[in-house]
Length: 359
Image 1 (cartoon, rainbow, N blue to C red):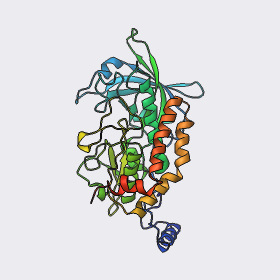
Image 2 (cartoon, rainbow, N blue to C red):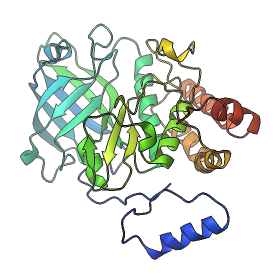
Image 3 (cartoon, rainbow, N blue to C red):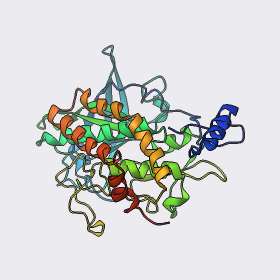
Image 4 (cartoon, rainbow, N blue to C red):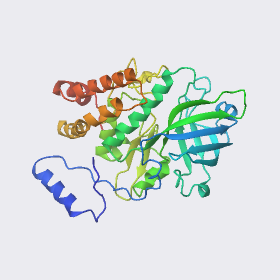
């Protein structure tokens, strides 16, 4: 993980480390900013699920898929470990693209809009708007497993770099104001706000403009592209800002590209997931490296980061109590195929050196 500051006052220890690596002929790590402002620390400090209850005219919210849809009033209850409840009046609306369509997800992804002044001394202190990933389909229990797998994909990337979206598991009850509609309780997860993510590193979220993948931090771009290959996700684009957040760190410093939204990943293999026909792959289970070319030595340095986290990545799935065993096993088997690939020079050449994009 690269955690050295890119600024002129970087510590002497970092400079000595880089000098030593260069003398040994090793690629120097890319210099990145240390976390600075962490307004989300409290919310994402634990892996324990938050117990929440969401109430309101949920049917109206879930069916509102217009581009100009407004926030609708709702209430969010948080039950803490001591059994105390805290009530938040929030705005609520659907978000996303495929999963926002009611026919695809009867409980679509949501955006929660908090009143910041009411959050002091609560688990949501420092927040404003938060994305909630839901279970999508209430009647098909496999969709709950898909949401949990997507949560763990975010956790994999957290192990590889701090330049990643943090997530918090929630156990949430959806209670419509219509008494005829039975409440349901499912797992989902909250995603760190984009602006707060950027602020963690003293940076800014880049909202628009075309940014070439090779204009971003080179090591992180490669780490990210290998990660997308690892989980078999091709549903992303740096220039198009598609499922990629670009964070500007300061003058003269390459911005960083941070991935999100992995429901189309082959590791999950959701029934609706289909690859773009232009990629010429038949299934989302088929891995495709969509990053730019690097030397074998540069790839080896990236693969070393993955190998260093291999046991921890497997443990994420095997020790996760909310995922059914067959989905744990399927996920680990799928990841094992990735590790087999990056351990064999012949497969590295076939999958990365021969398939990489030219600058």
